[in-house]
Length: 101
Image 1 (cartoon, rainbow, N blue to C red):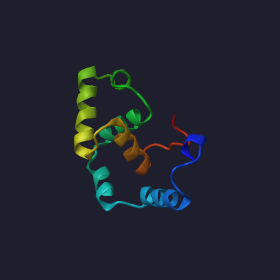
Image 2 (spheres, rainbow, N blue to C red):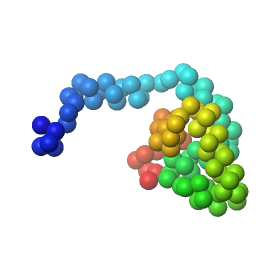
Image 3 (spheres, rainbow, N blue to C red):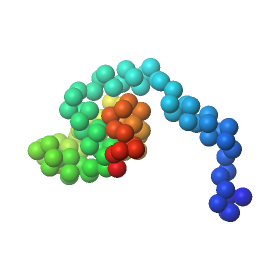
């Protein structure tokens, strides 16, 4: 079926995943409160697909500082990649995936 373009999962599984992603997470909610306004700003830029170099340029900081901010954010939020930062930003309303690229 998959080779013919069909999904390997059923509608029940899909609905369960959507509900789990939409469910508030008190730990995650408290995590956003730990972010400074600058960290939120950087998270938004990263979630909007800006590279470290672009973040540095836009915020008038050095590339090394931009990279350090990214690493600190990932450690602080317990995510291991940029996709994790994007998920965090979407879940907490920092970016809107229907509007932001």
